[in-house]
Length: 261
Image (cartoon, rainbow, N blue to C red):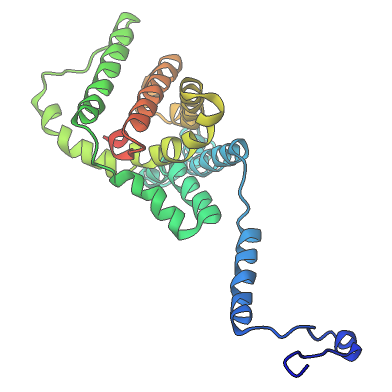
């Protein structure tokens, strides 16, 4: 019949296609190849594997910055006075950088926008803002009380300069290290991967322990706050903050903004 194209054995032997390719199919081929390429280049890890890889990356990035300072303060090397604060601050961004690297590799720019957008979710109930401000104060007060009972000293809370410096200190800590460097990693990346496996409480305790390990070099650098705090008390405080942060994150429908306050 005139409407049917016949193919000879020569066509098959030559490797030519045995059916006419439509223009839509030919246009789809490059897209399919690209999708396959991206799938191969961006393998998705299981929850546990991605959690372990992330923890290794986060600790590795931060410790690369902090261990030279530990060595310098113990006369095992030298670090310039200008480089010291830079390395301290850069190290605090280890969890954030590790999370950004992993999200970018597995989810691309769209996933990265979604990940970073967690810090912009401000439309939550006013009760969550109140909890985000009150809970850390309660924990800090409790830890301070335990510290005093164990023979520690209390800072002079009646010093006006301390209170005048609080707003500036808050902004600097929020923007330069501190919660912004940590919580994108601990809550924004690690929690969604371990919470479905361990549950809320065990996941929070696990993240608290990982965070405590991440902080260890800071206990060996005399100019840090951690060097003046008993390690056991710090671990308890870190786990308590981890539980509260997880509760805030879950209750506010994954808002990192409240955790960063």
